[in-house]
Length: 365
Ligand code: KG4
Ligand code: ZN
Image (cartoon, rainbow, N blue to C red; front, side):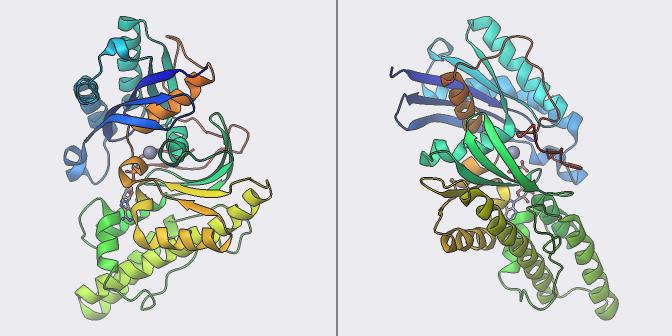
């Protein structure tokens, strides 16, 4: 039976406080009525990374304002909301707790159902919100905290084909920018510098390409960059604009090649499922990178698979994706009660071995 659902979503697992309202009539596309994101970049700027305690405090201060703004912009009242969906992990625990407590308060005060959502499911289900993708599809989550290939089989079933065994690519971009004295976040700065650089001037390693699996490693790239930078500095007593551009271009080309090659392998596994409408989607801040996007798109095209890259505002952390993932769970009859726990780690695919490492932006699992 067609039922129109209006869902409020909350997100606070890293350094963005976000609230959103979405609406969907059963069988129709969803509408994002509002999506408010309050970033904290200024609060963490001087520390060179996200400080969990500062992030948690800021979430606590900003969450109710974001909820108010999201309801106002959507022009709906709390009474018109059908359920409250919140990121319950993985992420920085103080921030996740702030969101879960806020959502529980709203649920208790209004009597509305509460839905705990895995942040990674939020990213992974976004292509269904934006492009109405059918299951199964292949997904690459690539951000400052995540890097993994997932096959999405249903709103609650995902298979992880592989991922980073150390840093996420966004972290590597951020560290590269730091080493070269470029502004944070590093991704856009490195990409801008790379535009005028020669990617072949300094050749970086392509880690783990000798392994047939879909795992990746990016921490060695930043060490390679440090060495390359130091040897140029030792030789010339400083970096020219061209040196910096070449380092950025070489680094970006290495990340692009690794992601593209591992995507090719992930696509082979995915295509073994004989999907009716094969699709490869990307999400996460690093998906904003034009060179990386182009590399992934050409891999998809070569395999005759549709390539989907949601709009950037929905690729990076936001609450519309949490509202959507909550809506998908709600339609399956899945809700939570006041025992909903905040989880720092929460692998989407519980059957795969746990991922190693924990980035400054939160758990990678
Ligand atoms: O998804 P996101 O907003 O937050 C999480 O990490 O969860 O991703 C932010 C990351 C940062 O590391 C940033 O440097 C990277 O995405 N990023 C980029 C670009 N824009 C953002 N990396 C490469 N190229 C870009 N254009
Ligand atoms: Zn995220």
